[in-house]
Length: 68
Image (cartoon, rainbow, N blue to C red):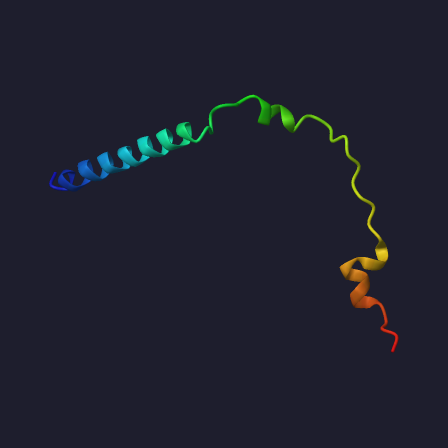
């Protein structure tokens, strides 16, 4: 039972930290828009991926012979 003397203040401190973190997140706007991020993953990207030049890839530069 004597361990409760330590556990109650520790739990109150953790509760205070959790409340402060929630308050901080609300003030910073973390909960302003909850719908758009969930929908963004479903939309297709209109931009095309840039084409890569195989001559400039890291794998080809290691295996290519060097001309002196």
